[in-house]
Length: 227
Image (cartoon, one colour):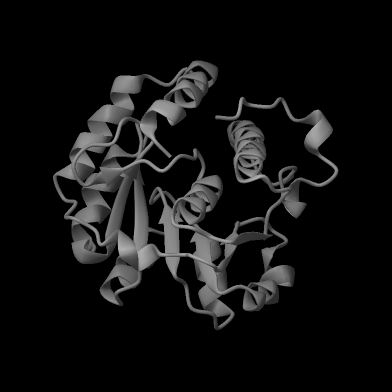
């Protein structure tokens, strides 16, 4: 996704949450100090079914569904569940707030990690990014991309994983471990889940598909415009 397409959505997110744009840009610039060029061909999803794995409490019971996918992109702690169940990750998508040690370990095992920089995780970026093997770190931002820091769209770890798979040519997206009404999250996370829902609906419209994870929910979603 071109930033010119993403930017109006990004500005709406900033306005809704009251986030300052320069905060995102500052942390983006910080992660850029560590980031090295990433071989994007490693994330080629052409013709593949990609499991987009979320960290909802239901994930444990549904984890074996990832076996039906060709590739597994997991969000945050969902990556730990995937690995504990005996499956290999193809990409961990994280802002380093819950399992940064997993991100470090994966990069040292040569598994790609999409490490996200935003206005609220400066300390985490400074502490954990240098510990990673930079050859296996894809640095991302929700602000304007620069140099070796990329923006493929998305806001939460989960929907960013879906936008990444789309960007790299996934034929199908399979959503495992998602719960937009997760009762265990706080109000702030619940608002972020509303945005994840809107963004996935936007993505399915761009792809000309209907994601099963949104079935029964579309009529209540405040839609974003499609470009």
